[in-house]
Image (cartoon, rainbow, N blue to C red):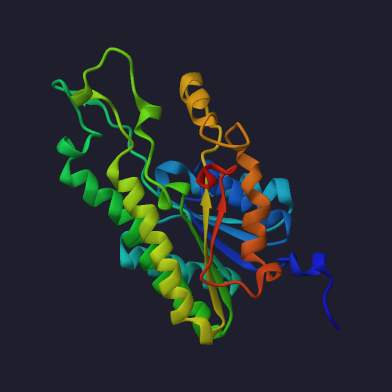
Length: 277
C-alpha cells in the first residue's frame, strides 16, 4: 500500500550520525531528525560535550540519543564509533557530514593571517583534515556499513560558497591597509566545494547498493555576528536577511528521509536567493 507524504518523512527507529553534532548547526540537524522519530548520534570532540548535548536532545524529543567523543580525522577512532553505535543500536541508517573548522584568524605582527599571502600551511592542513578527510573517513566507514545492509543516506553539509566565491567586502574593517584586511579563509571554499564533489562521487559509487548521497548548501545563519556584517550580507541576499538557525531543519529532514527517495547526487541550495544574483 502506498505511503502517505507524512509517512515518508517518518524516521522512527533510524539511527542518524551527525559529525560536529554538538555544534551550532549540528544540534539543529539532530533536533530535526529526532522530532521525526530518528535516533541521533552526535560525534564531536570531547571538549564539545557531545554526551551532554545528546542527553538534552533525548530529553526534548523523547527518543534515544547518543553522544560520542570522536576524532573523525583518525580512522581507528571512527571505526571505534561505528562499533559502539552498532553495539548500542544494531544499525546505521543516516550520516550527516557536518563537521568543519571555522578558524578565527587574528592579525599578528601587522599581518592578517586569514589572507592568502600569509595563510599558515598548518591551518590549511588542519582545515582540510577535518572538513574533507573527516568526511571521507566517515563516509567510508559508516557508508560501507549502510551499503552492506543495502540501504542508507549520506548528507554532506556544503555552503553557498561552494558555488560562488566569498565577497571579501563583507569582512573589511575601516582604517586597515589592504594588506591587513581580514578575508574569508581559502580553506572554507576549498572544503565546501570538495564536499559537493564527494557527494557526486559517492552517489554514483553506491547507487546500486541502495545508499543515496546528497549535499545541502546553506547560506549564512544568524549566530551573534556583528551588526555591520549582518547588514552587509543582507544586501547580497534577495530575501534581505540571513537564515534563522532552524530554517534548514525541514530541508535536512527531507534529504535524510524517504521523502527524497528519488534524489541522489544533488546539491540543494537554500540561501535566500544569494546565488541567484
